[in-house]
Length: 328
Image (cartoon, rainbow, N blue to C red; front, side, top):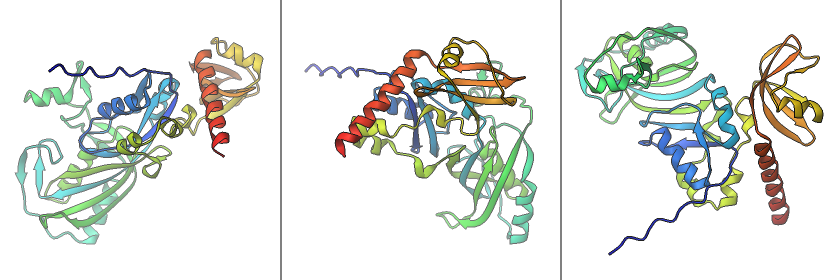
């Protein structure tokens, strides 16, 4: 019996940011491809990977928003994690092989607070072998899978907030609940391992969830099953505008003549204060034009939307407004 060929998805221009609560077990790219298929989007990308064993906030970028995904890479992140004490694995999480078991000593609140203080502020981490960080063009996890350990330079990161609380896991083994807000590039598995070592017994993560990245929090996110259950109009309504990615950027609005010239890559002069990160809008109609920086009164373009992308975004906004008026 011949199998029925799968219907080809008709792709279309989709612009915006979808806040996804990534499920356990999927890679960031697998989650992205599923959402891209559901939205029938032509172009998609994400703002940094989240481990398959982690859940939580994963901003997905579509269309013009992919041009600004890099602006979100520097955003601070917040995580919740569970650190099982007394058992160390070669990956720092429950997926790895156990390499050491140690008795867990009695831990007082005072000891826990001393460890918490030790890891607050600027700290140094050695990137784990099981990570996507590249050395000589290869990801570290590729070396690890081949049984090769390579030298990694320590990296400085910043822990903005850290909360540690004693808990129990299913087997009545001691564990630590971790809540942490940190700078980009912080390895939470490594942080957990280092906390376990500081407590004298080692440990590994059994749970990891990202609860916030930049201004985006888990409560704003949708899930893949929820997205699948919606109709096409409802799915598109979940998208945040591309300018949601750089919320802390300085906003500059240009009149029509300057906006047209800016979109060709020409610098504009104005009474502006120097700024490294600028989001530029046109005023008639108000529309995102791109990103820039300001130096000595010059607005210098960085990433620009094309006229076609701007027109598609404005047309989509008009269509949503019309649909809402019809429903009302």
